[in-house]
Structures are given as structure tokens and as C-alpha cells.
Length: 337
Image 1 (cartoon, rainbow, N blue to C red):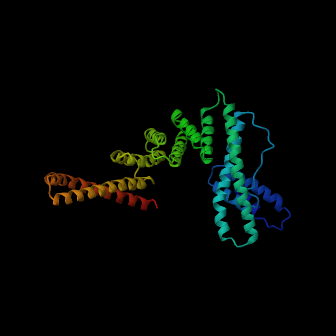
Image 2 (cartoon, rainbow, N blue to C red):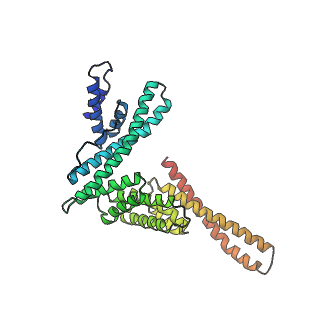
Image 3 (cartoon, one colour):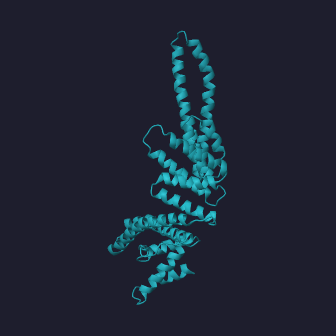
């Protein structure tokens, strides 16, 4: 109902004397729709982007600080909803600017873009402050699910702000301490993504801390939530680390645990197949060197011939395995687009 009424108000003729209050009401109703999970949430956000001033920053600096856990949690989650709306505009508006030719409309779009950037910055800060405050208000009778929601949202905010250590600690705490909690899988997933960022940003060639934490947490996710989308993503994350360690058989075992219909199965198979193919090529190069040395004669010629005879079938089997896995990966990637 809010969505339909907002649509009607937003479409009123600009010459209408009631246009200003109508647009204000439309913005308010569209904002309500855009915050609440439903089939109309995306439409509400799109409508909000169309209404002039729809993404203007709602400043709350004059409000009194929250005095209870529930109030602080509510303000924090509302601020995150504002961030998500603004972020959606940041993906929509630049594309529209590229094709818009009307200068007045372009100026309105640019204003929305600037408003969205300001909203993201201010509301993220507001959300973090309120959620941290909520934790200080928690007591023995505070529901664990509510506490874990706050922790998970903080992990998300820390990750968005590139505070990867804080994000990993907060997310992994939920995942390991409360594995049956509704947000445990998401918390662990955020933590795993944060450890990966730390790994990628570390310029050192050897990264024991990051490698250990990525592998340990990925293994934990796979073992704790086997068969889930999070487990499949964790396996896909773990595979490159197993390949670097030369544990290809273990990597193949993990791939077999990814559901055949999972979107990540194909990319995982391509990684495994690619690694096996590299091993095959390296083996063939070595085999050719042995063959040349055997042809040149010498005291080791007979020993090399025996090694060639034993290595040839092994490499052919490796070649066939790599080919099958790569073909399977390509077909799955085609099926998932």
C-alpha cells in the first residue's frame, strides 16, 4: 500500500500546488518500503532515486543519545538501511549520467550522487557508534540472537571500512561461539573475507598468520555447515591455498563436496584442473629431458629408460584427469552463465 501511494504521489503534475507536501509524503513512504525486506523493497529504492531529494541525508545530530540496548540497536540498523539505499544509488546514478543529455536532469542526478556519498559516510559512522553503544547496554537477560545481530552488523561495517582485523575477530567470534545462531554463517563468511583481504594486502612472500587463519576458518565452515552455500564458497576459497601447498588430492576431495548445482563448483573445478594441467606440463618437460639424455647414451641411459617407462603412463593418466575436470568446469560455468 505504501509503495502504491508513493507511486501516485510521485507522479503528480509539477504544476500542482500540493506537489511539495505530496513529494515529501512520497519520499517518506518510499523510504519505509525501501527499508523493509519484501517483494517491493527494490522498487521502493528505485522510486526513492527518482523522487527529487530522495537520497538527501537525514541528519540526526540533534538527537539524544540512545539510553537502552533496543534503542541503540534500532538506530544502528536503521542507519545501515540508509547506507544500503545510498549504495544502490551509487551504482544506478553513474550509468544514468552517462546517457542523460538534459542538463537540468544531469544536475539533479549529480546532486543525488553527492548526497548518496555523504549518506554512506555519515550513516556508516552513525551505525557503528550506535551498535557499539548497544553492546555496552547489553545485560545478562539480553537475547543472544539480538546481541549476535549487533555483532554481525559491526563485522559488516568494519569490513566495509577496511578494518579487516576487527571484522575478522567479530565475525569469527559469532561463527565459532554460536554456530547455531541465525547469523553465525554470515559472520564466519565476513571473517573469512576479511582474512583474505589481509592475505592479499600483505606484501610478504610468506604469510603464515593469514594463511593459517584462512585455512582454519574455511575448514571450520565446511565441517560445520556442510552442503550450504557458505560451505561451497569456503571450499572455493580454500582450494588455492591447498594448491599452493601441493595438496591437490585434498583439494579434489573438497570439490566433490560442493553440490553439483552450486555456482562455485565450476570455478573450483577450473582451478583444480588448471593446477593438474600445470603438473602434467611440468612432468612432460622433465620426461622429454630424460628421453634426450637416454638417447645421448651414457652410464645412466638404462636407468632413465626405466624411469621413462614408469612415468609415461602416470602422466597420461594425469593428462586425462586434468582434461576431464577442466571440461566439467567449463560446462558448469556455461550452465551458470
